[in-house]
Image (cartoon, rainbow, N blue to C red):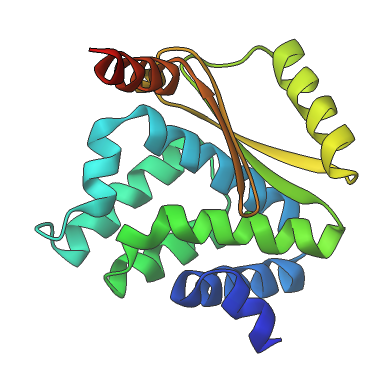
Length: 186
């Protein structure tokens, strides 16, 4: 068991593992996964929420109240709300995104799936997401659980991360390579 926790990111992995065990006892593994996915999406889309999660300036009580309001508005389950409350109390809310990633990884590992992070400049449609999932399943050879994230800074294309492998086919990277090539010409 400790080796699996270590592979999933140290302290974030331990928190994620504890949450998964609680979710298994409560028989709400999928509900917690959905809550965490929607929370990750909200953090990615809201600079204010990201500041709330990462800010060392806010008090524990302020972070706790704000996160409770966000989670209640999002319709998150009781276990997720209690867990986020514990993170705020322990001043570990800044680790939330790492904990979510570790939870996805541990859950996928238990289910025999592979987690892939797909970063795009704009949200992908359902058809595009299914195409990416099918392509990754063909390459990886196992069922792939896709965690999509939007980063407008990449301008276009995709960045795909599966385990320790990464394929960066973003427009910003291509432009950077072209810029470097042009410097070498002159």
